[in-house]
Image 1: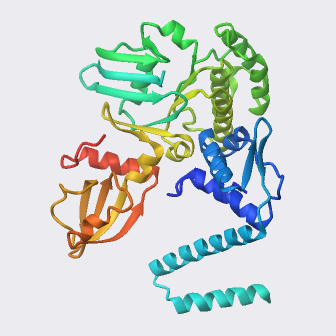
Image 2 (image 1 turned 90 degrees about the vertical axis):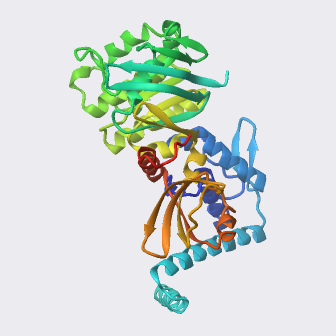
Image 3 (image 1 turned 180 degrees about the vertical axis):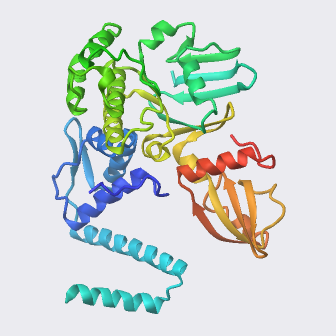
Length: 126
Length: 302
């Protein structure tokens, strides 16, 4: 889940880690009550500053995605279905925004993008 | 005490050619401080000054609150050092090396040293001199960590090692830091490694500290801007222009420092148009900073 964080990205590392957790909760890969890795474990696995992981977990706590239980760890909270759908919609919008920006740089038109999406979806369904 | 290392108005001279001039450097307690700079910029000399191995001409050095080199014996007991070149007796086995080292450090954690031997997959009965370069690097890191230091000073600890070894060494370092909240001062050429773990960045060039900032500010503050109808006057800008290059008649590429979102209004007010803001990663930012610092027209930046 955390393997693709990119230190070179302009998005801060803590925001990338928090976003991975949000996506996993939205997609149902993380269920209510599931434990997140400990700060020590995740920081050393990703070779990032422990403070970065703490910052990510705090943000998720503020947003209501996880709860910090003293001495026990960080656990996924019950997140309502609408909120999870909202998070997925947010991720979809982010993806599309990125795609449109890249298409603009490459000189690909909106129509061409539309037909490429339709083609790819068709290819995937068949 | 807020700084684990604090250097003030330090001057040092070695021969006629090399000098460190007017160095002020602060490593906040609990931070992971990345020390960048080209070869010969004075990084290793600064590290030796911090460790009390060299004596400055003037200025002060405080490490863990104590003056150096005056209090070196007491301070070095609390400092783990991984040098660029391993300097251990090649005929001693790994196990003997550990036992020898243990005798100097009352804080030595034998259990953890044993676990690290396993994590690092090191044979304790192998002579140090016959280990591979990567294995030697791991032994150096192990020795520095097992003494449970309050400050780790690492001089190019992973230079020339393969990615798997680097990963293992840095994972062990981070593991230690998250348990003990120790401060880390690390120099490296591997900028992407530092980009992951550091929260402070100091850049040396030619014996001077040209920048010292929290990582996020260092990274976010430096941007490349694509400007059309670029104004000639930049004195009134809320950011500082490090360099500007013409791309033909219509646009210019600016390298700026101190950029914040919303500053594009400055261009609007001058009938210029800001076409894009390009993010730089740590390596680009570092390279651009040195380039502009070295050109006579570039402003000095701190």
